[in-house]
Length: 288
Image 1 (cartoon, rainbow, N blue to C red):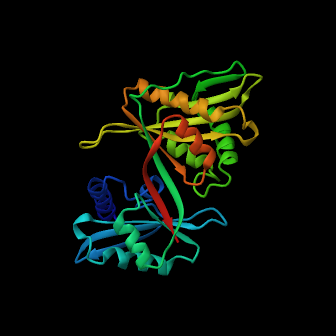
Image 2: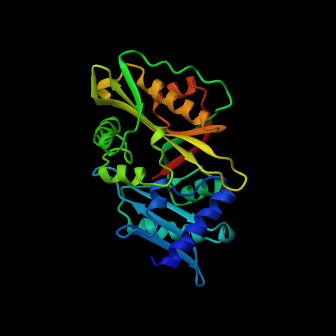
Image 3: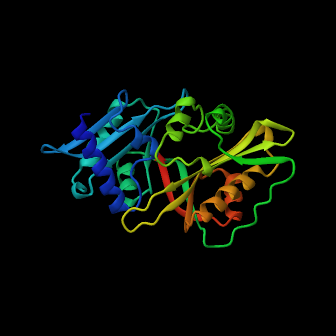
């Protein structure tokens, strides 16, 4: 796409986010707008682009991910169905279509297209004004924050071990780490690393936090962005310790609320987050 079309798509994403109170595209889909090599599709009304979709390829054996958005001012005119029909006609059968927030119009379109819900991603939230449990770090652990690029190889190793099963989070390369550490929102003080005191060079787990800036009448929002624990270190309570470290950090920044995303069938993680005071806020659904 050209520069003008790319900006028009970003404007549509911003308008849809404001209208729906939920972002229509995920982080990776937004980052892919206008990127060479990404399959992108638009639908127009006259000369004006009113809808956009892109396809994120997944790792071998995993379905491709389709995400789309229609300008709120041009909805209920068949543009979404035309766009999705075009995309599905161009993408192999192994694909998923994400509906962020699973809004009624999105679920109705999916049903009309013969698609069924196959995966749920839950958004949980917690007020940071509520008391937090104390952060207690046992003597056999060393907890510190991100020290620079020398930490990247161990973060990458643990991430890919912890999320080997995950379609998007697993299989990262150094490029994914570099994209995030080079982003405007990155804060080294908000990345927590846990090491075994007996082997301080080997990472056991990490918690990467994130802060979403205030927009319009929406206040700043903290996020439990990634919590990854080496499968070989399971059973030591690292998930809870690392999550709490990040929550204390976000609270100390003065934030009033924090969110996180978790797979709907990840019982162990849901149990940890429920005990820490998180409750369901929204749901994203992948249809196929």
